[in-house]
Amino acid sequence: MPYSLQIGSIPCHIVSDGRQLVDGGGFFGLVPRVLWERVIRPDEKNRIPVQMRSLLIQSSAGLILVDAGQGDKLTAKERRIWGMDDRNQRLAADLRRVGFGPEDVDIVLMTHLHADHAGGCTRWVDPTDADSAAVPSFPNARYLIQRIEMADASFPNERTRGTYFSQNWEPLRRSGRLDLVDGDQRLAVGVRTVTAPGHTESIQAVWVEDGGASLLFLGDTCSWAAHLNRLAWVPSFDLYPMRSIESKRHLRQQAQEKNALLVFQHDGQVVTGRLVQGARGVEVRPEITEEAWPLVGGQ
Image (cartoon, rainbow, N blue to C red):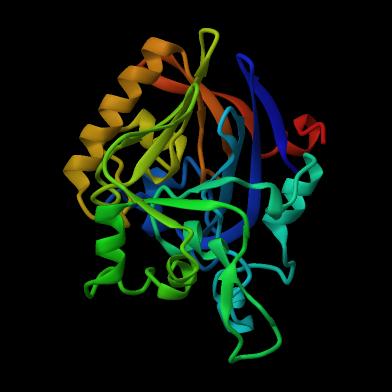
């Protein structure tokens, strides 16, 4: 169920490609389970629910989609491993609920190229054919990615090759729809990206700002609210842990100054929140929770 909101005069929609079940140690790294399970209780296999949210922005440059989720190219075995159901077109269905289709998207901004963010950029022409070709899921869009991220994905190492898959971006390159960018970008009036290294070398977060209001889509720069409450809590997925801490510190300071609405991409409980001064320092006060999501969606 999407959630629609206004940032000044800019309409935004939080949409989703569904949920996965992921080992809790992945998202909480060196933090002992006895501590992180106070935030989220794992199942009998130590898995926690992880959302795959995206942000849809109605901007002066057209319709911008931030990240495309896992997509539908997974095999039945892979779906079982990730605890996913059999639904297809999850993200496309959310787009339609707010009045758009994949063909309406003008820009797909990929925060980075890990499979749960970029898998949905392409789809199989024939899902029933194992030899089918992959094509862009958003046929009229330009796809933007940092040049350094593209290089890292194209030449993965032993640690990263399990999440970088060329079928998620190679069809975009062949079709001439892939644009490589360097550093922070201004995508439209009131919409800009910032690089915040840590999870990967050049991962991007997205600011939407207008009329004194601000929204920060954090992506995997800080995928759970608990990671912003406790800067030392770094996912094991983050390639550069100390840089991740400093990027979070910088984004947290900016978000506090702007009283920005924070959107958490993977948090299984907190969808949005704002920073407040708590008993132990700055912390996230949830505004929309996953439990209340169907009640506030309004679409």
